[in-house]
Image (tube, rainbow, N blue to C red):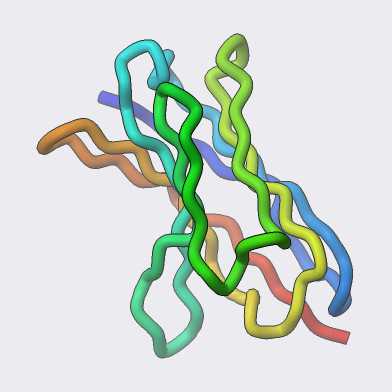
Length: 116
């Protein structure tokens, strides 16, 4: 069982930045989980934002490339999402996800609101 706890969401003005954190209860990278961030805006389906493998390979949704950066701290079992140049379209609940084969774990989500 893997527990994921997100933090770092909040209200930010357009053009601003936030850093989200996702603390895992186990060393998910040593166990080769794929870890990523998803988001769900009101009335929309949940979508993938960014992911990072145990080997450090990253991938991003086209809408966030060049603005968001996913990273990890193995010692802290923590994944980060640095979000820059935020715009109102980035407003959503952001979720951390870890999966390995049939195993799939989600955090509780953290709200990000971009508004002036």
